Length: 309
Image (cartoon, rainbow, N blue to C red; front, side, top):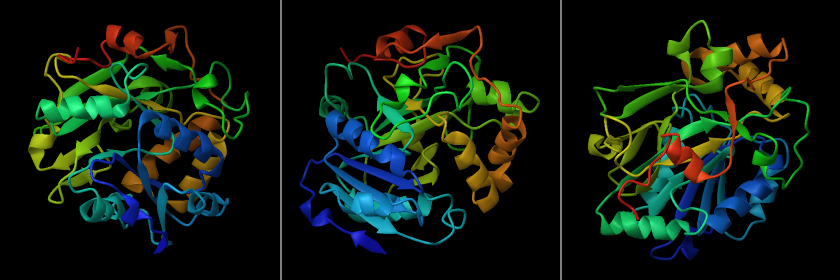
């Protein structure tokens, strides 16, 4: 159900952001500011029955269109169907960025060039899709040690990441590169790493109404849009999604989502979180690296500027 539909204000050439969310009110001010500063022109958001005031906050934002649904997240293929429908209606011919409210997109030269510089280069290079590995960020110390304040940059708290510890394999059916590892594999899935969450994503796409995401933003149809990685380590330009799930809000969020049972594979991910969180784990370890900038991640081989100079 549309709560605030401002899509008639979308201009030709606008960069659009799509997201689904539930009870993310505390994250919204910084999330919107970050992407506005990056160059997003309009936000199209599906609110899945939030109870924390997030819907009213989104409704008040002049560059946000928001829809509300009480329907099951799982029945909508974990929100994919909702966003595919919105993208089919509103994103045709636009660069479309699809992210969660705890994901922050970075790309080569993002410290000096706006998002439109990247999309202009992609257009000039006839590239339709742009990949970004999900990089789990975490604090040093217990997850609940530093409270997150509304409007705060979450990377001020969750500023560490695993510089290695990743596995990659080609998905033969869809052609995308399947990536697993990092702190979630190391801490929450240490005994069953094959069940660890996938870290490969294709969040930025020059949308066509014939396109569709298949599973989150991990893969797309048609399959050619998934051919975004070089087999041997990143000749093609790619970015990173800084994933700030692990703040002091995480324990309550994980408990809520486990009870709702609306996530992939019988909520196996949230079951693993619940079992491990009882012991107040620290994700930081002696091999953790503190985030500085995108150039650091390129040196580590986690992203690449490819031939974009």
